[in-house]
Length: 253
Ligand SMILES: NC(=O)c1ccc[n+]([C@@H]2O[C@H](COP(=O)([O-])OP(=O)(O)OC[C@H]3O[C@@H](n4cnc5c(N)ncnc54)[C@H](O)[C@@H]3O)[C@@H](O)[C@H]2O)c1
Image (cartoon, rainbow, N blue to C red; front, side, top):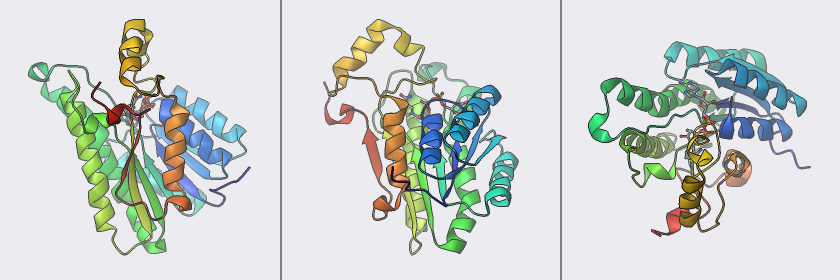
């Protein structure tokens, strides 16, 4: 099989589960050295084993993306172990299911800090390396819910809208470098984030009616798009958001 990421080094955040795990495994399969990080130690160890089973070198670190010192330690450890960083996937994320009027400050901070501040910390920490070598790929996992609002998800919507615009802002600030910065916006995907909701057959039916492809996404559906944007095949795609949603954004059904 074609190994697009031989000699490349990728960091994947939120890699203990779901989309991040799928992306880490595919990067390993395609020849990358992979740093996986997350706050979920048990899940992270499972991901590390899956990446290693692909024959890839893997560094695994407990990192809370809200903590600047942990983010910077992860970047430093990756540089120490692998010598460089080519790819960053800002995937760690959290959801919110509280009506706006009932949101307290702590929940607002939790959602914004994980979904936005973490992306800021990690992107800023890898850019000096990418600028020095004049090469890099940053792929941010946003959401179609950063472009349309969902009930009880106002601050999640806010965070993902901010992540989309951070993608565009970093892209513009990387002008003149061979650094691509893009986003993948998933629709409805079966992962740790959605498994409770999608455990309810009525909810599954509700979403199936809204998805023109008539199926819920798999983590690999999103991971393949992440790898494409991280590859040199996407070298003229910059500041873009790729919807990977089975067509949900095409319609108001
Ligand atoms: N599943 C969907 O339908 C869907 C839709 C749109 C967008 N997304 C986005 O996809 C991304 C991945 O989510 P997923 O669906 O795979 O869910 P998931 O819950 O399976 O994975 C998210 C991972 O992020 C980790 N994480 C949470 N807070 C963290 C922190 N502070 N520091 C480090 N890691 C942390 C979790 O431990 C978990 O392993 C998220 O950004 C999410 O918003 C998912």
